[in-house]
Length: 236
Image (cartoon, rainbow, N blue to C red; front, side, top):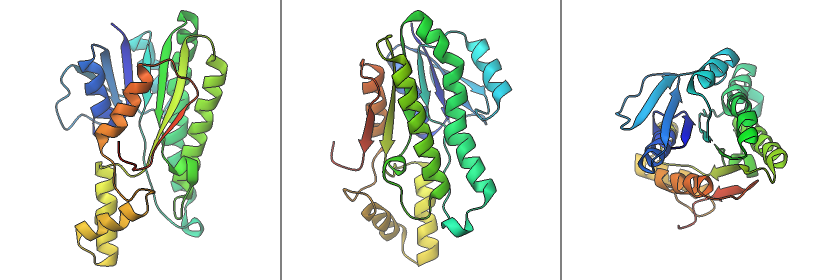
């Protein structure tokens, strides 16, 4: 049985990835900064702040050898560049990039020694294209994509793979809050606010969590390395 760790694993995309991994027979641990609000059948949950070096080191030491790591923990923020605070910038980089760095660093040598392992990071299309009002978020996603490119290069030919999934807006609590914020600021109803957000995607729709999970699982189950899978709303 393979050991899998999913960060940000108690809700949204992380929870769904963990449940799919557990259903596939993997021994799954979900890391998060708070207790799970919903049941996690077949999954062990642990409190771990992925931005804290000591917590990450201690947690992964307790878990032992890891065969699959899904770096999913993430936050978003929105502000035009001139109003983006240093605190917003640093927090985005800490969670979205440094967290993935610390978790990947904790397991990479063991994977290389065993000659097998899968690392999948959930980034964002913002890391591919960028957009208005998301300087901190886009920069952090660019950073984590760069990290995965380096890991893929260092692991090439070893049996260890590192890949990235880059979705556009996904129907998660984070996106639902964004839609509500658009509605509040523009006076639109929620349906029209969602339509306005969807229009900002290449194919005009919000994608579903299951589509992201499918992409993550496809990478876990393959030997592809150094790939960036863009989920931009095109029909699947």
